[in-house]
Length: 205
Image: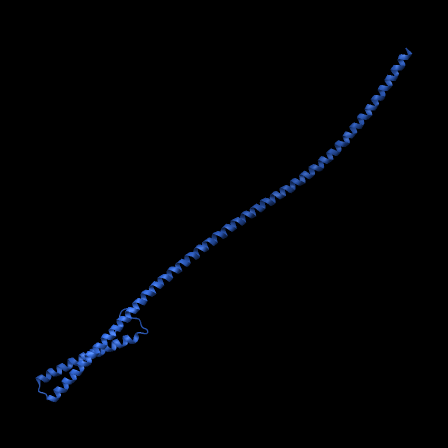
């Protein structure tokens, strides 16, 4: 016999087995009752003894009683089965809710993980860009420092040339001053000689 829809094999499997067995008993009892009725019908057509008739009648009553008892048991087992199926349905719905909640939480965690991974990638990219920019700036600064060093060398050379020129200029200036002094002295001397000669000539006249 097939398992009822929604039935799960587990702790309540004994209920399903008892349900199947009771149903089989009922079917067997109904078949026996049907046979007994056929026997009674044949006995009505054929003459039988009173003892045989009473025995068959008693057996029929016993089978009817057993049949009724079995129906009661079957009803109880059906009630248990329905209760168990109801519990299974409630548990299935609860499990489905928990499954959906878990999947939602898992999706949220995956989404946050992807966002964090994206932010991490963006930060790495930004850091690489900054590092590249810093390296370029350092190259530029190094180039500027080299230019400054070259300019300092040129300025030092120019200063040295200027000092040399100034030294030459001072020497030349000193030489010029000396020449001027010598010429001035010569001029004064010549002028004194002229004055003396002029005075002598005036006396002679």
